Length: 242
Image (tube, rainbow, N blue to C red; front, top):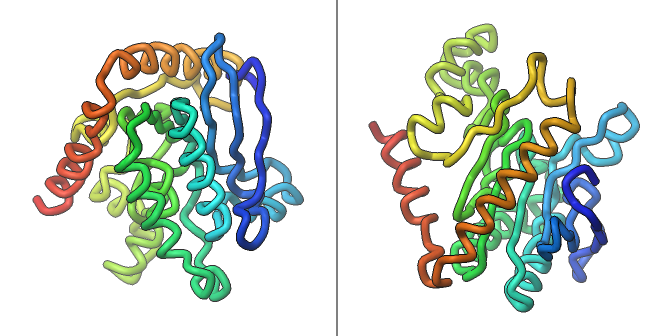
């Protein structure tokens, strides 16, 4: 609402059901028509339960696929907002093809010949984040994180001690500063002291400004040049193999 002049939400994956943890639809930003897709966590306890704490099911990712295909059909740029601890890992989600849904999202985003901008606005966790993160330009809010696993989970697996989360966080290099240095992301959007929630209007203006600037640059490129994801994956591979 603070970034778009208009937004029309579209629901459902046309296969099973609606997943509220992923919100998507048509947006208008300063006269530019875009497709917006993002995780929704909620604020109150009741909202967080309704949105499943931002952990999307296969239906949510298939809904995003439907919107991405529509975006390419009408040559509309895609903007994704990432804020999830990861995809929902319950038995039902696995039975309905969670891994397949995530993989198809990544494949589809790698093939689209329209500009894609991804913005990590809080927590970018594992494949649930990557399913919306394969983009031509990746931004992160200054205090957000982006990682294959949480520091607590990593510490519990490697050292059988979740209290070693600080050590794990340093090893994972999950901060915006670390990831910018490793060329995994393209831009860091500054936040006010205490975090984005302290001044949402100011942060929304900064995000909007960055989106418009980046869209202007990406729209000048030939569609066949929008293949930067290859270098994005190469950078990730180098970081974790070194």
